[in-house]
Amino acid sequence: MKEFCRKNQLDPSTMTKVSRGKQDNHKGWTCRRLGWGADLSAA
View 1 (cartoon, rainbow, N blue to C red):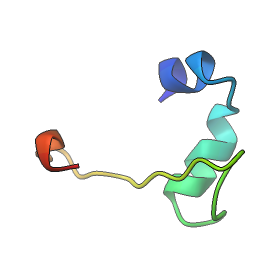
View 2 (cartoon, helix red, strand yellow):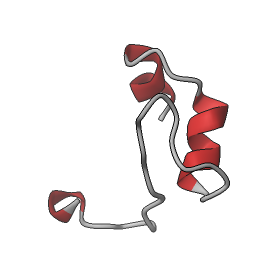
View 3 (cartoon, rainbow, N blue to C red):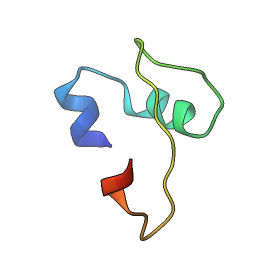
């Protein structure tokens, strides 16, 4: 996530809060946590 945040000028710690459901979005971006071995082609 660090690289994605850097490229999109986002704060990684805030995006982590979004992924954990502690915050709805960051600068309009949303995300969710995927389990280990998740099929990324379906995301």
